[in-house]
Length: 225
Image (cartoon, rainbow, N blue to C red):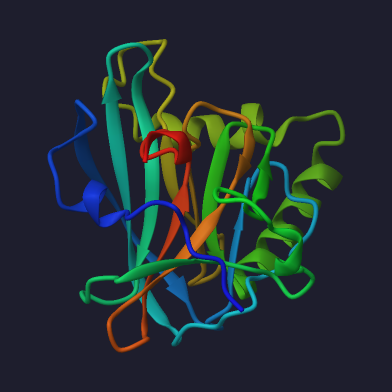
């Protein structure tokens, strides 16, 4: 049994404008995925290291962000894509974890997703997630009164600010290599901020997985279809 997205994300990938909103592509480099198990989460609110149940072929894959340049709210990250092949997806199937029970989903637009409490989403390999957990633990032990964003990641995000001289431009993404490792994690702005967001596997005409996308619910919402 599978639960298919209401949206065709190819509309966003293949057009410069969607629903009257300009779309801009941002490529943030590759994700190293040696285990083939992918974790989607808010990397600053990192409670459970549970990968998605479907595995991919180990490798390094491009991460692409599709930015909606909205009139009301400025630039908003609409969709993040982990691109596994160049093949076009024919459908988008909800990405599940082993403890998700798809029979609980009843209505069009229902989904299981991941919670965002720090305004960020991200992809990481399961091996990287385990390493990242140790990285956080070491930081907390060394800085018991500290804040890992303010004291560490803020400077990393600032490196990717569009205008580094603008004190209000904090940067919206990082592709962070874990110290002493070939593993990396990606973090990026989550749509309109905190909430719960779904991920979908893109499936091509031959039934092969071609991508993994996070839908930040900015464009192609269920009531707009």
